[in-house]
Length: 454
Image (cartoon, rainbow, N blue to C red; front, side, top):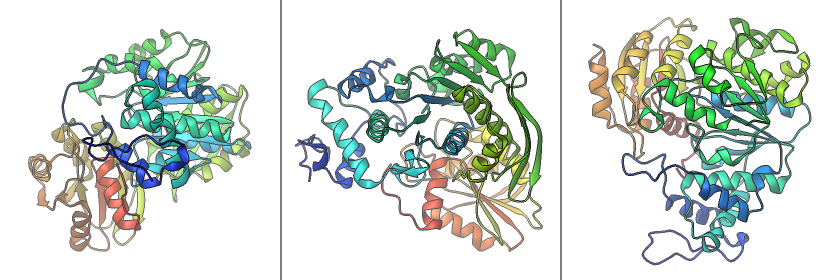
């Protein structure tokens, strides 16, 4: 069991051996670290990967222990990472996957073959990071700790491949110490503009930082000016949407989508994907192209069918109830809100639509509700997740009222969901959206998984 440093809140003293820490000790260490995901405002140090490079070096550079696929993009990167994981896995590979953020438990971010790291292994890997503090003089941030823990665990397991999702941007993201054989860009939209830059070109330049000169770039962004930024980053090869790969048919099916896809080496007809929304067809095309680039050969059609049949993405148009239809979707920016509005229209809802919305600071609630207005909601129940960056429920409500919709304010997320269900009829649809933190709180309450750490 850990001891705690005086005057440092609940930050545990680094352990003598990695096995000395419990899961609760690891959570305490994470909770006492600087969490840039949670910061509402403040001064940021100039971006650099020097800290991560130093800490990785002290761990014998675990990020280089296996070939990697590195995924960035404004929307769809989490779904794409899960699809690539499934595609690699059906070929018999052991695959480590690192994604962010989590919905309910921090363990969700680090997985082997789709199964989250267990409490004992997470505690050991986080403890191993903590041991580096005295050697390096570096106090890593929350995201740096988890990234290092993921690379350490994947190396310890000797996984055959790693699929790494960028946290934000790319160039200075903590994940970018990895030397990926395939770099993936899903798309470029306006998000995190206060950090990455005010324009899509600025954001593209940051995301282009993951491109490697000896690797292949799978480029999902089709805007010519933005695409040129990624190509100019100098990858060995470029596989571009609309030229070498794409989705030529994207049809609604019972329980998901039915897709026709093509890559440089193959074409695939009537591929069933058990995810909702036309945008998931675009993500699927990226994932198959990335997997083909990883292997350097086409993927067998049977393998694509088998892999996609197993894909699930919690919190992304996830249906958790019927009568009324109850959907969770962490649409955290205007583009995401437009996608969820379009997806909801695919469903034949006999009644009306009700929204439960909690948002984070840093986005325009007016722009979010303008995109969500296409759902034509009867009522918006405004809430706020228990999260430092959560926008107060009253501010969410004010933006909703500006669209002319009826609004109720129920700040606790779980209570807001119950209020929406109470006023909904069996023929209605209830959509919980606005931020992944609100969706995570709703999901934890609905599926009985208590939230243990952020």
